[in-house]
Image 1 (cartoon, rainbow, N blue to C red):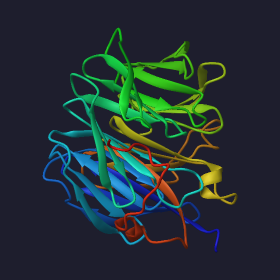
Image 2: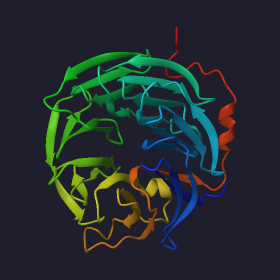
Image 3: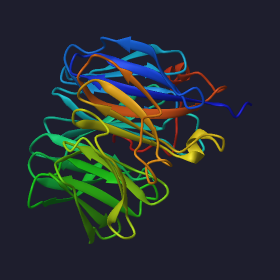
Image 4: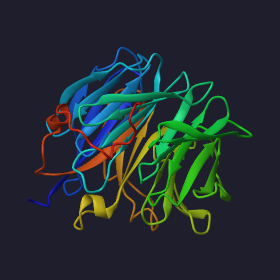
Amino acid sequence: MSSKRRISLVAGSYERFIWGFNLNPNTQTLTPVFSYPSHLSLIKTVAVSNSVVASGGSDDTIHLYDLSTSSSLGSLTDHSSTVTALSFYSPPNLPFPRNLVSADADGSLAIFDADGFVHLKTLSVHKKGVNDLAIHPSGKIALTVSRDSCFAMVNLVRGRRSFCCRLDKEASIVRFDVSGDSFFMAVDEIVNVHQAEDARLLMELQCPKRVLCAAPAKNGLLYTGGEDRNITAWDLKSGKVAYCIEEAHAARVKGIVVLSDEATGDDEPYLVASASSDGTIRAWDVRMAATEKSEPLAECKTQSRLTCLAGSSLKSKQPQAGKINAKVEDKNQMVTDQ
């Protein structure tokens, strides 16, 4: 099997289109490969795992796509309100995700078996809409934050909420770090870093303006973007700014994707991609960011108001995503509806 990889980026927009791009760092090109008017109204969230893409919108539906063939795989209609957050659980030894977890504006969480996308269970987690969700690398728990200013933990093995507490202010983003040892919550312009084991507050990261997106990296950095139009890399050991790509976009940054050297291959640079509400997607070689004024490695203008961004690095030869249509029993699946 060839070790060559294809780097793909997927963005959603207010205009109900989902956009797919291939990134070639060697030729410094970001090439559009597909666009679908897949939803009836704006797209709120996108998620990618290997070659499978999911998008959620204010039309209460989740749409599925195959990156390897740039084709649609159908839709899921198990939500009765806007789909606000999506996350795949992908064990490192499997070529496809095992589960998809989605959240909606009613405060509910839905769990799907990604092999066939069978709906397993829907949980009522919050009294108001879920703003964001994050799945631990083990696949055993998920964290949610919502419009009711609450933070909750969901046991994905048993399929029930195990903890919930009220925050001082509403959080808009929750993320685990790559190891799962800590998690982050964004509240306006502050990002709180917590110990995962006991939720103890480790540090506060003070950003200039409201944070709209965040992505952790394996080298101990956390990338944030938002209304300041910058991409800021935070050193999580010191709690200080490692470097900052100032004015990375002409408008607010709505999505950041980190593509580590492990994901992209030893011959590729360390890459970060970002999307702005002005419709521009840019890729950055962040090795240059710490030493000089950065210019994007590649960029593409979609002429849409972008809302979210996700990415994937695919090997050139792998099974087709169409395999997900076959239902296979799995004793270790995330939850069983009893």
